Length: 404
Image 1 (cartoon, rainbow, N blue to C red):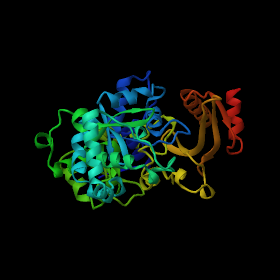
Image 2 (cartoon, one colour):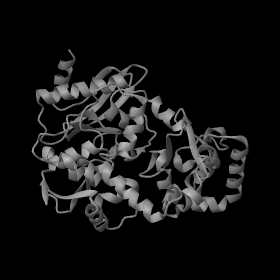
Image 3 (cartoon, helix red, strand yellow):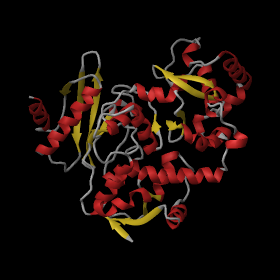
Image 4 (spheres, rainbow, N blue to C red):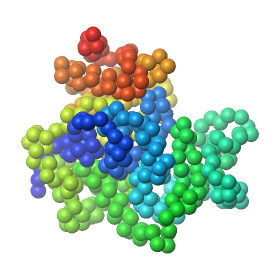
């Protein structure tokens, strides 16, 4: 049994996530699709105090790139949207892995409004027939009778109808316009799919989702498996040992962990170099709150000793760090977090509050790393002027001095 230091487990995980080394060349459109395939999925969120999450997750890995490339991949059919981890973009070849959920959405909870579907089945069927006959629609194409809504819980009826049809796979998102979903019938978006011919057995799909999870994480424990694709919460230790017996995983132990741990075969060749410190992440960047590296709170705590809560859903008075707080990845560690806002009209990228983790020492190298990463992020947002409202003693001045 190979024993890894925790630093090596971090390195292998970041390698799997595309965060081992900074980009060495200018990003291309193909790199966007490759990055999503490497992560297996790209979570969608609409908050845009900085770039919306899917665009920021890609920036963390690719550096400056053209955000419209993501939109183009969706419109061109290289990606599709569905409920996987949460609402996500997925490579179109993985439609087969989500199809069973569409055909039986009973375990999807609030994502499939079963009672609404039952109550309004006639209206929903009429809407589907209308789209089939007249073409794609947006929720915005339907007027709200009672004024402006106040959130997803107050959707107008047609939006609820569309979401039911999306959950059961009758509709797909054909494209996004100004980030608004454009819904069309599945047979037009994906004309070559045939359930009778293409649907795989459910157990084969479950096994493939497990494999995808292991590859995306690089280093995996049984208690991490269910979260990645929101698979059923059950014991996965035996399934991981079976993959190890098949040569797909290597069993390891990690210093400080009691749980059996496995390294995906794509990263076993890195184990020695990661363990002796010859290989480590050299990336410094800001992460989205919905980045796969941090979206599982327990995994982020185990790997990085980083306790992360997305506080935009927490009442303002109870927030500890801020509304939309971006974790800071620095050379293989999560060393802090920053509450940021891009003021696009004035060209200012504001750091409302920058917090370092306990024990992180402000050094010349850390300051230089941070300054470069923050400026790259600000420039990509089109808000090149950095303004630091709050930071630990000495850091704000050091970052400002770098600027001078």
